[in-house]
Amino acid sequence: MLKSIGVLTSGGDSPGMNAAVRSVVRTAIYSGVDVWGIYNGWRGLLDEDLKKLERKDVGDIIQRGGTMLGTARCKRFQTVEGRKLAYEHMQKYGIQGLVVIGGDGSLRGASELSAESGVPIVGLPGTIDNDVWGTDYTIGCDTAANTIIDAINKLRDTASAHRRVVVLEVMGHHSGWLAITSGIAGGAEYILVPEEEYDMDIICDDMKYAYKQGKRYILVVVAEGVASGIEIGKIIEEKTGIDTRVSVLGHIQRGGSPTVQDRVKASQLGEKAALALISGMSDVVFGFQADRVVCINLHDAVNNKKQLDPEYLRLSKELF
Ligand code: F6P
Image (cartoon, rainbow, N blue to C red):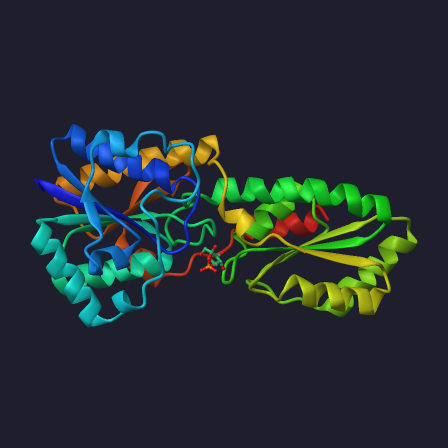
């Protein structure tokens, strides 16, 4: 049994991280275990920016986006020396294990720290991209997809009024999950994801034909990993001659009060992570498969690439 654990959030923040932190902290305290909040991701461990948390410290946060612990992308932690220092600081404060909440980069760092120092680590997938292998779900993806839908609904109004093509660029450098999910839910005509290749000539010919047949407007959702929305919009306008406008949603997608799904799932995952770590488990990530909490090997999670659901890809083309 571990008697003292730490929790940190790392990488891009995502709505629901607070619910996960709250759950980890309250589960640990309920189990009679000390829990340290480490601020600003791995950087906080290197800079000794940490504090022992009490139940009340995680009150009034479940409804908030972002992360009360702060987060960072920490270059120093990517070095062996950096991770050695992180381990030494854990020893200094008597922190016997860590719950790490973040995306694939953060979990990779966790996996390296555990391999090099033997320190017990349990990961939780926290990223709006929903691109962590072994889990259908990552904390924050639902809120982000709903934020995109809200934007799509508004863009439809103005696109229809003007008979325009509207291109919406959404996040996702290597993963098209956000684009494909929100594109399907928002009824987009074209959804461009990094997992597939596109022939803009064919797409633009289709668009011209559709307009000739009386189509009022066209909505294109493009993941940032394909190309910038500006580039795609320029190509479309040049090739079709149709008035085209571009919106880049940017970091708006990362903020906002988490949805019910993100709050509940993050709470479930936080509890499982804390209990597993306290009981001596290590090198695992908790996620969801078929709506049930599952335990995945940490090294597998970071060494495999999650594929975009082929059913989503098929559906997006069929419903166009
Ligand atoms: O990893 C989450 C994510 O939101 C990606 O979708 C996006 O490409 C990236 O973070 C943006 O990172 P930053 O906030 O550091 O610019």
